[in-house]
Length: 89
View 1 (cartoon, rainbow, N blue to C red):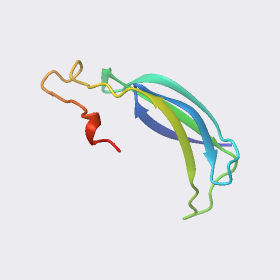
View 2: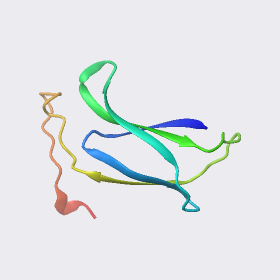
View 3: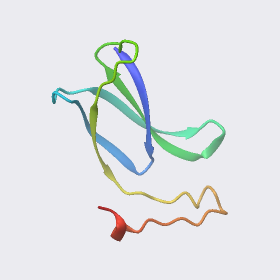
View 4: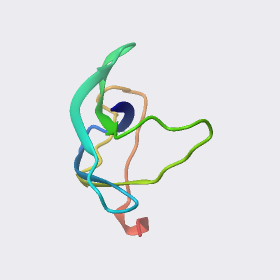
């Protein structure tokens, strides 16, 4: 198996990952800090592909996740962010 890393917001949790043909893809996930800023956390997902990709080969994977998007203003005190769900479609 080949491991491919994916980073998601720390408030999101992966429920399932599938290939384009709908077969399951194994994965693991954990909340980890960035090396240069221990207060800045992300959800680090290890996606375990069934085989290595050939040069210039592309595949599609589909990731189902859920959760809440929280701001990072607790880490970056100067940043004032917000998410307006009215603009999300």
